[in-house]
Image (tube, rainbow, N blue to C red; front, side):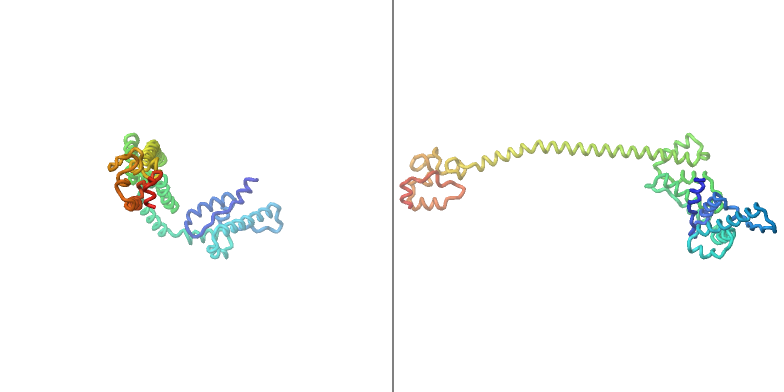
Length: 319
């Protein structure tokens, strides 16, 4: 009882004016499951009670009236509001069913034209390079099922031939293997699809393995370059620091200019007076005080002018 009640709670399929054949098959199954299809299929009249009806006759008449009402209400609930306005005046369930069939199924001429269009669409199908065999087979079966719903036979062997002819070249090895091992005229659709999907899985696994190997190689190359750069970095820094020390180290006497260019090194000897401690350019015996002062005032900034102090005699004359 619980399962029967839960099934009755399922809503019927709704017909919106398209794909009538599919809706009719689903609706017929739904009515059969609810014991209402006989009322819709056959024109059954509610029996008239005699003058002195029995309890069984009264019960039978009541059940028949309820089934007809349920079937009519079920059909009303199974169509869209637009279609409902066209059938709401019909009083019997079989009248509603016959009206929908005549209105939307069409006559044999119309169905024949629909079948031709579907077959033409089937013949024009080709499998895309980016498409899987499963998607391609589902696309073909969707067209074939529409043909079958219109009452035309369409064998699976024809679908197999279509797939064998229209699949891409990457499946050529698999097709050759099937030709050598089996009779393609008797191979089933499920067997063909399983074989093609197995090749797709192997090909996908190989591609994933190649991508993983390439990624690992790239990562290893990046790590090696990173290690080399990190090992070279201290050497460059040390060399740079050494060069800076040699070029920019200050004189230990004047604390300003490089030692090799200092005018007041204690070990340097004047070429004019022969004394140590200064160069001939600022020798007191070579220049007058005014000239020495000019030399000192105009000396380059990068060269040292003073060691500790000029000789006292020079300072007195300059001052």
